[in-house]
Length: 219
Ligand code: B12
Image 1 (cartoon, helix red, strand yellow):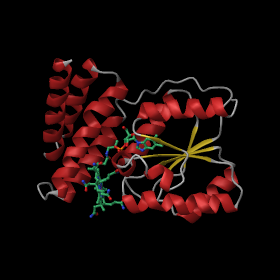
Image 2 (tube, rainbow, N blue to C red):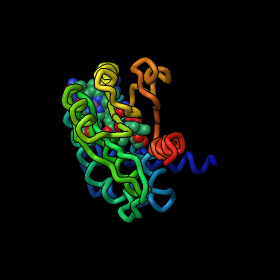
Image 3 (cartoon, rainbow, N blue to C red):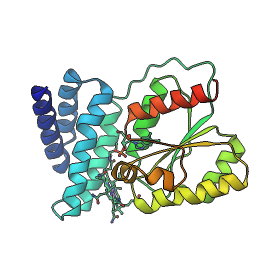
């Protein structure tokens, strides 16, 4: 167990170093090594997310520049394609599921959640990034979405989910809202405040929540 922790720490250290020096090859190598020790989901949770959290914290305390944060996100986005499983068997009966970032341009969480859900056999409608409450409401109504996954990393974006819920209620949309991202990881009760139905902290949570909703709705 201790060994596993040490190993993860080393991968995180190497990854942070590679990202901050904009060394995509080194980042790729580190992920390839981590891939030998961990499953793809674990590589995300144990290496990529903590590395980016460290970089975000470095930015907050002025040790890292915004351009380094930007390049770190860009490199991770590219190398993630190497670890998100591609093959999948699409399930026959399934709910209509969509994903979006709401008033937020942090895209990696959405890409990862979508990628792994797809690998688990779910078809996901991707509405893209930085949507407004108005446009997301219209998409959901038009496409008769059953489950909406929202990924946000900034508190104001998280708070705007309450307005989205209000609009959807006014339009009598029976959509289940599942939220995830940093503000919800910091505050376990926030999802209730914004009137979401579920909150997940990881990719595995996303998959388990979809299973629970399916059972609930008899799919
Ligand atoms: C990379 C990054 C950026 C990149 C984004 C690049 C991109 N294409 O995504 C860039 C440079 C563009 C950026 C910009 C900004 N950023 Co920024 N950024 C980050 C950073 C370092 C990493 C985020 C990330 O990608 N993490 C990796 C992903 C995979 O993790 P994740 O999204 O959390 O997803 C995981 C889980 O949360 C979960 N999950 C995610 N979504 C969902 C959804 C569902 C339904 C479920 C079940 C689960 C789930 O599964 C994922 C896998 O485990 C964070 C630091 C941090 N602590 O997160 C700051 C951070 C989020 N940024 C921050 C800020 C302030 C900004 C800017 C305002 C900076 C500025 N002054 O311009 C802008 C705002 C941009 C905007 N309007 O959206 C703050 C937010 C503070 C706050 N809470 O409000 C943070 C926390 C940094 C900090 N420590 O202060 N940023």
